[in-house]
Image 1 (tube, one colour):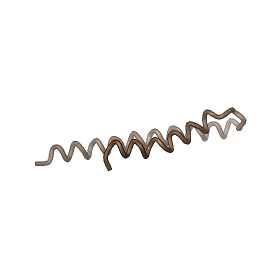
Image 2 (tube, one colour; image 1 turned 90 degrees about the vertical axis):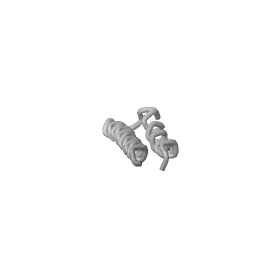
Image 3 (cartoon, helix red, strand yellow; image 1 turned 180 degrees about the horizontal axis):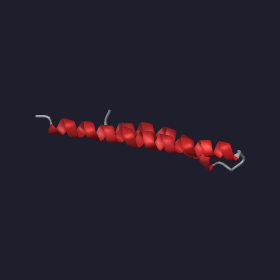
Length: 64
């Protein structure tokens, strides 16, 4: 998968989780913490996947 397509796919869960976090704080502290942990998980997974794509692109460029 190319980098742009991957970024589009990763943007969807990031937007959904961010929407949940930005809602009015009606939830308990535990729920808010769980939402922030979800945001961190989505961002971390996205960073790792993008790094893998970059590593794959570098490998392809280095190949004869």
